[in-house]
Length: 501
Image 1 (cartoon, rainbow, N blue to C red):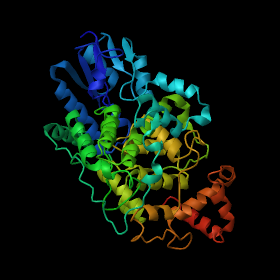
Image 2 (image 1 turned 180 degrees about the vertical axis):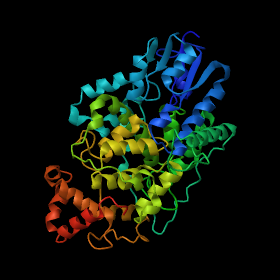
Image 3 (image 1 turned 45 degrees about the vertical axis):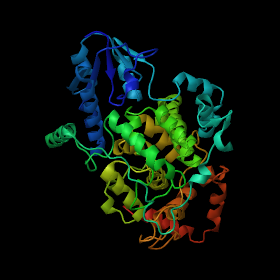
Image 4 (image 1 turned 60 degrees about the horizontal axis):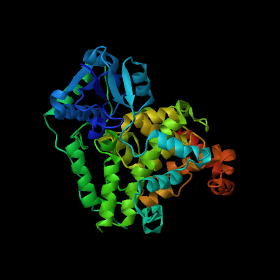
């Protein structure tokens, strides 16, 4: 085989075999490698492992005789079996580990990254014009909107405002158990899925691989056709209701109006440009309100794009960021997604969602899971690995900035201007999770003290000196001096330790 092109398991859409400048030679033979070592190195969520393998095998079936599909122990072994010493091209991988691998191999030519809106060179040019403190999401988001003429009218943002986030923070409607949104697209499993499940069962029985969480039926697209159907379903039927309540959490409605497209984007099945263009077209056609279209566009053209570029811009040393000095290990109940061990209803509900599906939306990730870990001082590197393993859309480039920077504030503010954590009052306002809970969101001490409320004040106390000098956290830190029950609160938090709350 001469001049083959190698597709990683998250490079499964048409963009990754498209010819043209920086692309794949037309009709080049293709190579895909299924490495079992990937699943031995980490204890992945079973649904994530299933989706990864199903997507790869579905793509191989679509490509037919054009692809050589190798099942091997390692990528290096699989590539040797597929092409021998012949030259190979590959688009820039999405992780530093994979990039180091391909750069270490003889005869491998790395092509530019695909699957994002801006090139790495374009981001570098933008970043060069902004000092480190200016690499904020809002600055970058406006740059992308201008650069792509996205939701723009005559050089100005559509509707006169760049960011409609203020309109998208509504609490749930009073008494609502669900938002009554149209159901999301759900795929149907096929013989390929059955084969994947048989292989995963066999690997587990052999003892070499173990998983966490539950698998099946598959909830997320594993092929281009399914991903496009999911995108159409969202834009045509669900996007209109997305905006105002995108931060809501409801026990009986974990999906709300969210798109569920993140795994398809991160597998390369969807291109971000087609997603944001369809959302804008729906708004211009009068089918969806601007705050819903803008909120969705900001998730993809703003946050997703931002996280991808910061992953490479910050460098490998970003992985060890830990300015707060948090080193406590993740407890076993958390690592195992053991929702039954947890009494606190919000945390139990979210852990169960992750265990059952490998997914929950951004607010449970940030303000329940991430906030709880931050309050307890857990090791941000271990938490990053946990998010990577436990979520179907989790990859190194996704989770490293999201967890180290956004969730755990371990970088000291390189990404965000304050730690994102709160007491139980925020969860109570934005959800229906607190009502039946044995803990009370307004209680700081005593048997019914909310773990998030005690954890919040304990976190502020522990990092008082640092946070007092942050304009966005100085006021609540000064509030510590008004808490008559602070000593009791701190004792309670200490006594609870890392036991499941």
